[in-house]
Length: 153
Image (tube, rainbow, N blue to C red; front, side, top):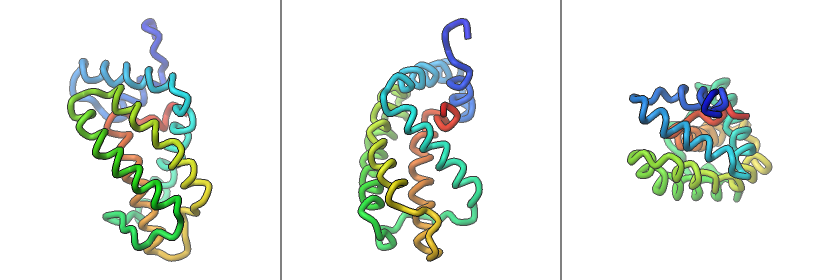
């Protein structure tokens, strides 16, 4: 708090259990920078929604996303955006470039918003529902590579 770090930022980083104080600090700095982005609040809210959905429906998750179950353009768009983000963000997170990783993840704001606007996650068909949950797991895991931003909302 003396350094101007909000408790929510600390909690977001603590949730992923960094292995060293230096790594913890780097993640805190990245989350602080992320919070200043215009997309931060919407993405934090979306991550909270995803976290709640996944927590309530743990048995619904498919092992992998299968495009054959998509029935909305928003699903295809989000899936493509997640694949691009995965390729860009995983190396950044692995090399502790957390600020850059979260900045790249901020580009997911529009596809995530479009997905939640156009798609009902809890579809009647079990395969479609499980596939949508698998998509949300991918989204959640991308952010958890740095911090649990769902606590920022």
